[in-house]
Image (cartoon, rainbow, N blue to C red; front, side):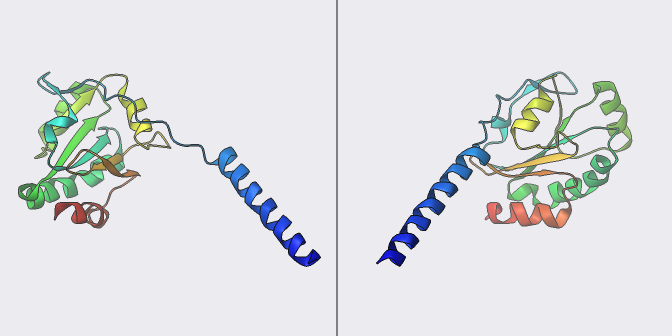
Length: 168
C-alpha cells in the first residue's frame, strides 16, 4: 500500500512539474501583426487577400542578400510550372525601390514584387522569422492560413514538399 502511495505522489509531482514547465517555457506566440502597406514598383497598393484562393509563397528578400538571389530562379521556374494549378509566389523586397528596379531589370521574375514600409521586418518576424534574417518565406493555403514559415534558402524540393499537398 505504501508503495502505491509513493508512486501516486511521484506521478502527481511529475504532472505538476510538467504543467509548470509548460507554463514557464512554452509561451504561446502572439498573433501576427497586421499586414503593413505593400506597394508594387509602380506605387499601387496590394494586399495578400488579392491572392486568396491560391497557395501563396510569400518571400521576403533583398537585392544585397546572396541567398535571396540564389533561390529566385527556382521560384520563377515553379511559378511557370505550377501557376496554372494555383501556386502564386509574391516577393516582398526589404530594400530601396530603385535598387529593386535595377536588379529586376537584369534578373526579371514572373511573379509580383512588392516593397513594404518600415513595418515589414516586424511583420515578417511576427509571421515566424525568429532570426530576423533574409531570405524568409511563408506558405499560405488557399484560405489564407499560414501553414509553413522558413528562414533561409527555400530550395525547390522543400517548396514542392510544402505546397504539393495544398495544390490538390
